[in-house]
Length: 375
Image (cartoon, rainbow, N blue to C red; front, top):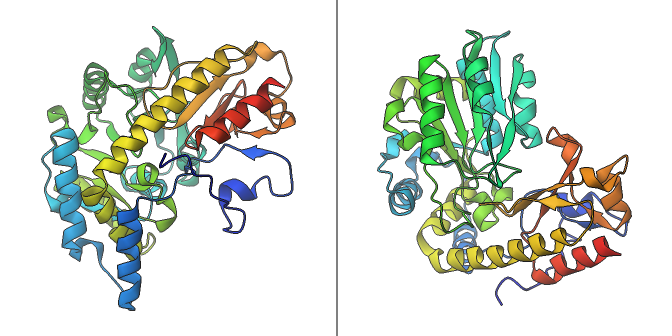
């Protein structure tokens, strides 16, 4: 199958593989996949490079890339946007840091849905702000927000911004329309701006749920920052291209002003790759989802057979949040590493009882990982 190919990344300075260089540990941590990019993206990149000139390219002028986003969001989410709402960024991490800078003053507070991936947890402090954690609770076999805590903390006048990850990383839940309405009600009631990191939105594995972009919610009247990218889905994260959708003109100006002179333009090859991803890779995308669903189900079955480990089935992403509190060990991370497996440490996300495993890999690698874990 297309996704069964094992590709050696040892000579490519891969962040994921360099971490355990020289150690007999299979890396399954950082959130990029082990899948080759779709051929149409590679072809588009070859064509752009062969042109021979890679000079300044203002993303707003790249009309075909912007139109590709407009068309993709209409097709995938029935979300009708205008090209002028798009603000290109070199990644969602710079984008939510820009949101902190744009909307808060030193001493203000930023609410963060937790657990969450490390750069998002770090953003408030980097910008001289106080982080307020809004926990995640288990309800009916799925993780969701602690809405009582959100309501309580949002009432603090110093809380100016709420950054949420949807689909959630690392727990893999997709917020429902009812949950998003509750978030909107709370944010609007307390004059809190929502910044929604939706980088995994095109990786919905549960066929009974649909992703609803925050910016599509009519209640907000466009007063929301929605962050997206083709990077996770199509494995082009190293090309440095993502985008914010900001309908409200004043908010969009605040955002762009905060980024001015600090945040570089999106990479020209990233623009090329994003356009190709959203216009020529539909079949590949559907095959990817099928493969990831199978990997998820295999992993879920294997984990359920190991005493001391527990995992809820993620509705989206290629990431599994695994509870190792039943192992009775001092360090769940060290337990996995001693077995020859390198997950992301749960402590980096806010809970050391867990680890996060990336199952965006050939099934053979996943089988190898589970064999190591069962030894």
